[in-house]
Image (spheres, rainbow, N blue to C red):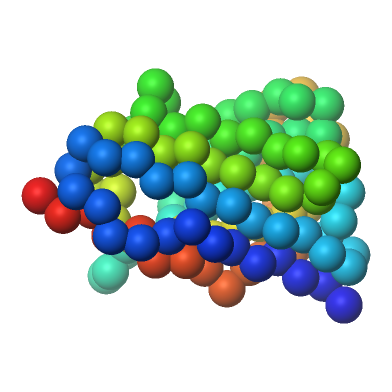
Amino acid sequence: QVQLVESGGGLVQAGGSLRLSCAASGRARNMDSMGWFRQAPGKEREFVAAISWSGGTNSADSVKGRFTISRDKAKNTLALQMDSLKPEDTAVYYCAAGYGDYVVPPRRESEYRYWGQGTQVTVSS
């Protein structure tokens, strides 16, 4: 059974911080690439950040300098530290995992095989 379970979402004021976590189990454990995507109301899901097994990272321009992705291989967890949050960061955030240990982990959704159910992040102005 493949499972990715996100946690840590919530309501925060603009300028605040949140830390999202994703716990991987089953076939989703020890995946080469793991990433975060988000979907705002009325918009398509978009790439946020990703990290490869070897430690390479990739992030969207909109979150660079504010969001930091990390993973704990021993615990099979993925984290997204979100600082200086803006109202436009409001979305459902999804954890994803895929095969392929890229130097720069991919941004395309099609590269990720397993997905979590999502956690809501709401940033008030």
